Image (tube, rainbow, N blue to C red):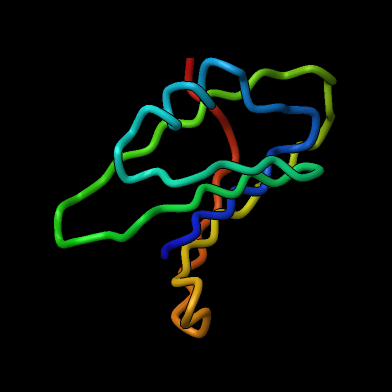
Length: 91
């Protein structure tokens, strides 16, 4: 099982539409939202490229917004952790 752990930008939440779109993907096993982190559990990955779009909604205006992290790891072997960050959202 692969986990994508997305820390949300300060002042943002995941939209309900984004959750529905993710849940309809066949490789998505489960989605959890805890505090300001979204956990996307995937059944497994293969060599095919995958794209996940997470729509966020700004609910609080925050000055000097800092980047948030995205972590991808195997649930059974978390030592192979891949970390990236993002700092803004597109329209």
